[in-house]
Length: 471
Image 1 (spheres, helix red, strand yellow):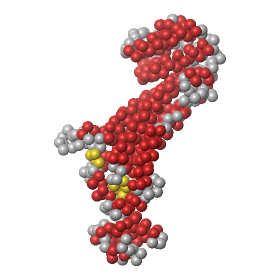
Image 2: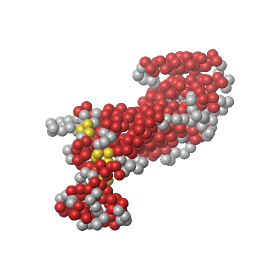
Image 3: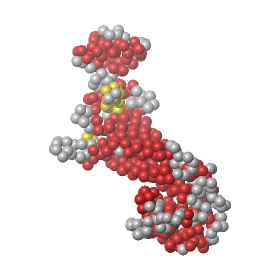
């Protein structure tokens, strides 16, 4: 794809008002063609639909519409094959397609822009583009969830320490931990689906800001392009970029979730944890330390979250001071949008196979799950079942833990006599309540980490993933 040679400033679609051509630097500075060219399939689809709307309104006849359709298909073929000669002086993808259409179809091509502005045209192209992105993104998120769920089902009996403040807290199942991320991705899919409902509004027919001056049937146009309906205010339709911002916000939250997952895995892969090993195919070595195996893929997943945050802030900042309606500042929404889409696609391509390739060291996890007094809360719960108020039980167990630390013993290793010295309510059944398995079984509430609760959630998660969230 190359730019056709043209004198600077020539051939402008708005050139009738101007005597002098554009300064070459200004022309380069204002052109969006370098990045908005990726919208060409949507621009052609919207143009074909607009031609049908013009025919319904009696503004062109059937023969003219057929000529426009044939010309648009010829333009499509050139773009698909890479033969299309982009012209920088035409500023953007819209005018490049329109000018080439006119060259192919003749003067009838000049009728296509009747009642249409680039302001409602770009809003349409972006919405059509985002609608496709959201569909493929939902499928990619489902694939990531399935990879997590496969690992959870494979390790449904594996115990590990749960953490708060990065300190060992209580025993949980590895499957329960992985299901937490599936829940996060459920919410991400919901957010993108909600965004999709607001994306799916037709702006075309709003023209520059005041609405088309011809009897365009916008309801029929919306049906033609598979939108839920037309926008209700022409000024809002061309000034709105909420749908971009909402998408970028949902993407930033998804990035945060992927980053947290990557951090867990990176920590677990350290020698200090030793809970998981990355496959060689998703790790790299060191240029100086031969023994190293670095989880670079996980680290880059985490690192790319910064791009997603930056893109959101960039567009919010661009939009914050703009008066109604369209301003050229809004051209700056596209590069952050496209970069976010590309970043998410890259992350979600690599995440499922990386997750599938992980090797969990369940023996080490199980050993860690029962150390550092992880069943102290279970001892407090034991005393509560004997009739003691929880706050008193908490105090007693705190002193018991302090005693165990002084003796270098876990709670389950203390003798019955030792334990009874802190409360006469403690009986010979206490040690059975202080095992990892007993701690897990006790938490059988909906959403808890008990094996039976987790088994139910695994089934429900598989159903949710298969059902999907897209409208």
